[in-house]
Amino acid sequence: MFSQTVEYALRAVVHLAQHAPKPQTTAEIAATTQVPAAYLSKVLQGLRGKEIVKLRRGIGGGVTLVGSPADLTILDVVNAVDPIARITTCPLDLSSHGGRLCALHRRMDNALMEVEGAFRATTLAELLEDPNQSVPLCEE
Amino acid sequence: MFSQTVEYALRAVVHLAQHAPKPQTTAEIAATTQVPAAYLSKVLQGLRGKEIVKLRRGIGGGVTLVGSPADLTILDVVNAVDPIARITTCPLDLSSHGGRLCALHRRMDNALMEVEGAFRATTLAELLEDPNQSVPLCEE
DNA sequence: ACTAAAAAGGACACTAAGGTCCAATTTAAT
DNA sequence: ATTAAATTGGACCTTAGTGTCCTTTTTAGT
Image (cartoon, rainbow over all chains, first blue to last red; front, side, top):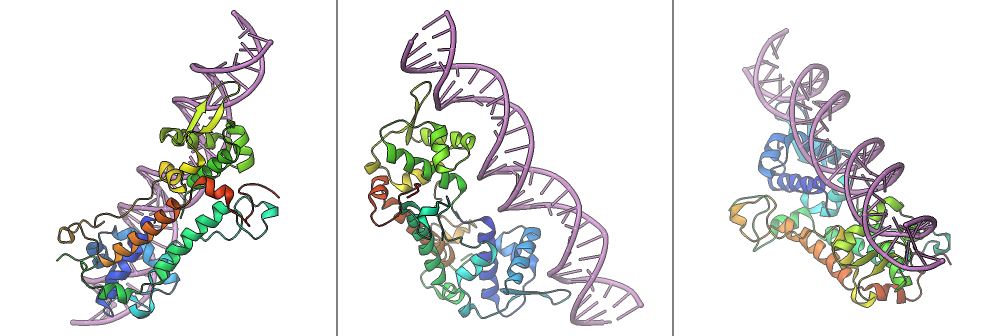
């Protein structure tokens, strides 16, 4: 349901939030999040395009969040790499349906809307502060 | 977010519910639902495997729903062709997390749970009875 | 029996997602 | 300047999802 890329992007961003504002190398992120390093590199470039992370080359370089974890929602990250495609018009393009959706597609879009809402409701900062849970991505 | 296969399967099943209990040929379904006929054939075989539809060869044959539209939910159809994979254990397999999910994956699974719930809440019969909407898959 | 109508099945092609590898480039420190 | 640390970019590979085509098999009616 959620793509591997979304999963990887979220892991990376959580890791960055945990260590903010210290830059993390792609290799470090890859190791602790268990994401293939070369592929993570591509995912991070996608996040850079959407101004979620900054990338800096060379010694002392690495990846950092552009903004504060308190201002970054799960939805921001998801939409940056694999946007939730709401159903806004009839997929069969039936002219009589006009702007409206039939009962089927309205239900499907409602489900998408709920996912969107759930993801918009949580910031990275809230993820880290979440009590009585395991620490994201971490042992013990 | 939802695969093409899910979309196609739902269209087909809606069409079948609209015409139940009369058998519909794959070609008929393909035409009205705008799904590639040869591919629809494969999708329907998937639905047959999960006892959602019956297929019958030869003259007068075609596709029919196994049960009543009132007993078939959207979730049944979705799970038959492309199951919603709930997150039940830590995807990173961190031993200290044990059965529990971290805050991130708990949120992701909650979103999946909501989708599941939304899809389980609507039967095919309810889709067809839905008032003040366009008729599913139909012009006018 | 024969025929026409339908699904069944297999082989294949195309595309996008996921993943790998390596050479080139930037950067900071010495 | 040189070196080491890091991302960048491009090419490539593999796999799964989607889609096509054609032959075979089943079925009902005549």
